[in-house]
Image 1 (cartoon, rainbow, N blue to C red):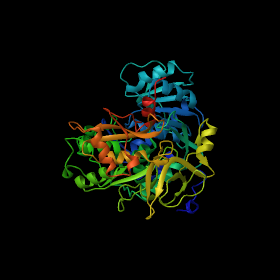
Image 2 (cartoon, rainbow, N blue to C red):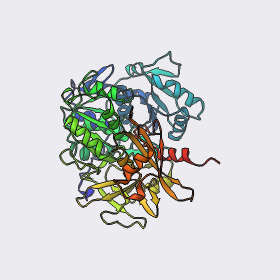
Image 3 (spheres, one colour):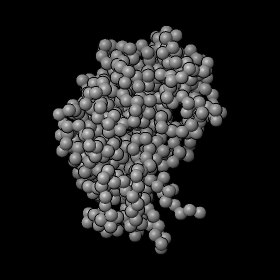
Image 4 (tube, rainbow, N blue to C red):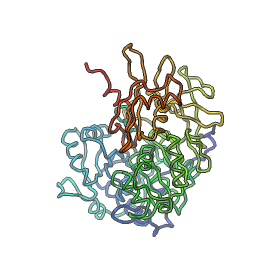
Length: 526
């Protein structure tokens, strides 16, 4: 375990946006971000961030008022996000794949006073605004696709009318800096409030100390900026060391990813951040690039535990390990991780220095090594609260510890193995079964691309495992063959009694399987 009390104290005045701009004050000509339309230097970023801060203040917005950021990954995203933080406002970065009803809820819940939105997403936002009791004064549009309403303004026009702010808001490390909404793998998203200090600690403790990201790196993240994982990958970590980030507005399909890996769009990345589902899809793609065509030196995975087989296949092809870790919206980034120089596939690795990990049983006491327990984290990047949700806040944030909602086993070497979400664990024949363990076994079969496991009652009302299986293109296998395949590798009671072949699995935009949707789909009809 690592004692967080040894961490240095940040100054009384600390503005995260100002900090990142200050780190790069001597890199004015270096490229900070590259999107499909070109590059943005650190000098240009500095000016635009300060213009954005002044322009938002010019709308009459006050300290800690919220600004919704509904934007595809592009150079306007860091300008919008950091500009709001520089002004002492609270940007609320939201998932770009949601519905108008979702945004209507978020507009009201956050009491957003302005929205920064991609032109392609403006129709969805407009629909959300018509069906919500919102407080939005101004809509600022990045790359409009149609003539704008008088209440809307194009982002470059908005910026050009403002004089860059001379100084940031006088915020402190514990002031609210931004919100992220939880991804909704277990239901309705929650507004998770983070301080100015929180992203600083993720960069210091993980981006620099574990991953070893350096100024010469080009970072590329499949996870988008609106996710906690993506925000660290594509903004906090690279900017903290003066690296360059490749941004991609489109979905991270294998084809889109390969184009960037091979330098067809922007600079070739040296660091890639992905998720297990994405890696599985890429390894199954017929146009997987050769090792000589990429310049990857570091590859990271999070979002869901990485099956050993995927890591081993990736290493065999590219000569680079996938560094698997676990983070959360609540902890902002990864707190338990393998290391670039120390990878044990099948585990999530070891505690990140600066974070403490405890596994607790149902009685709240610690569990011995080899026994599954609920994962609790103590560390300096924990969220402040869920906005407007005291019950969930008290349930999750407990006296300096954050309850993750995951179950883990601690191994003899101090590494940790994932056992599934606490609310996904199954009790079969009186024994806990990890859905992930069964899934990880199923995907070892050469015909299987993806699998998700839930509990299903049999005719006797007893819980048994059911697997939803997605096959690789052109492959076939029977349910009997798959059952035998699992029986040969796991304890007999763990094999899936029921198997359903499907075309795809319901997932969050980070690639987390939404098992609750499968349970809903499978529930008996009333």
